[in-house]
Image (cartoon, rainbow, N blue to C red):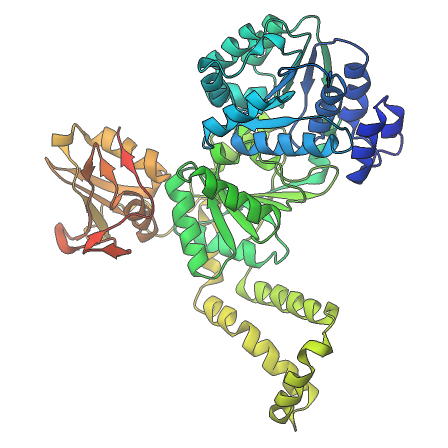
Length: 570
């Protein structure tokens, strides 16, 4: 796609940086690199770049940043701010690769969750480039460990996300204290009014560039929607994963609790994935990201905040298990795939009441969703079958490793013809899958609400025989009916339409809903705490509460333990 662009050798890079780029296998720059690098190398220009993650902007600002360094001078000469720890580490690693053939360049990533004393020690030993998250940078400035007065180049990467995450005051403070800078480069995927105000305040006569990849990306990214009854969302997700054996992607959820619960359920069923959310320690997050980058994991389940700034190559699919609240969130999520001219797929699993929100996203993000149908069990089995035999056909057995084993197995296969052997292989490989889908009705996976019908059970939420739960929170805890409803929705990720009748008492609340929604409430709240007090969730049917707890998860000393620490407030 870059046939008409100049090569890196034509952009004016120093020999050492050019060798570093060549070592990485880059031959042609991306559009934003071809536009940006010559401008930033030509002098002390401020820049306002509109570019999404994956457009190649790290090299676009990173290579000029490195070339502007004075390797004989002391102090931090260049500062890059990023919204998340993951992106901070990634930018630092990329800069180190670019500078691998340039002697004397020292780069340090500073972010929360890592030991601050070790970072201070590295700073005192001397570094020229610091890549930082705003919060940790503020901590270092308050400790007088980092002096911004000698910073010459300041880069704000994904500035819109930093503002969304509440770093506005921090950015104002940092930019004010780096008053001696000669170059300020601001990159953002979108240009809301707050970004425009920041650019007007801190940039001097900036060059404004827009990545051509922004207009090219939609043609490489397919948008699909799948409408199912809420109680079938989990099964729909599994079928979409099973129907795409080569899927390497991210599944987005709305809440940390939903991400953790979904991950645990899928792992129990044999799927190769991990969760990424804010309740993980930095070491745990780093471990998950490392496994995902090296493809030891097929999938990662993530919340929006945890996944911000993640740039992983060759992601094929993004699945929205929970539809995002607005179009910008959808754009950021979907931007994890279809990068560098490669194709990608964004799939939204819709509940009964999500159609209006999907139409809003279509209008605001200027995308068109294709309406998909959840694959049938027989279709998935066929895909799996073809994939399995494709792997067999492409494999190259090491006879030195398995020769003796085959000789030992040969008596078991004597007298078995080719067709019989194939039949047995197919059956042994797919027996579990066939049995699983044989127990399900494919018609139940279709969203009948799309035809004006209400899914089974909806609209009958006040039936006396509908299952329910009882939570030990009530009016004594400051709740009334509306606030209890909002409390349940905020933390469980459910929609109002997913819940039925709610009855509020002084120290208890009963909730009626379909079983899938009750399971979501149970896994979110049982074993958690409300203002320091343990929340108990018990099964409730026909106006009476059962004695046994509804949550039957892992136990320790007879007490229920939640999958991770949670303490809720309203």
